[in-house]
Image (tube, rainbow, N blue to C red; front, side, top):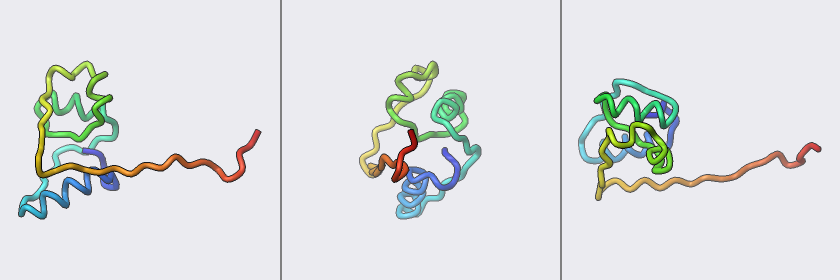
Amino acid sequence: LNPDGCGLRAGLIRELQSQGLRLTLNVESAGAQLQIALVAQGLGLGLVPRAALASSPWRDEVAVLSLSDFQPAVSLWLIHAQYLAN
């Protein structure tokens, strides 16, 4: 999973805790492609964007799980400096 500070990771941990479960981390990795490669090698699970999985050379080596009780919501904002330089 992504390092601490990732909203999806935090959501997964909260959901597991609400079900009385605990997440045990073996590896923290930044970057979807690295996560997919690690999962493909049997080193756990990952939360990655669909587009990252579709473009991954490892896409046929992993299984996508459909979860009915975990549906993360993500809010993103496009930001820029108040005054853009030339």
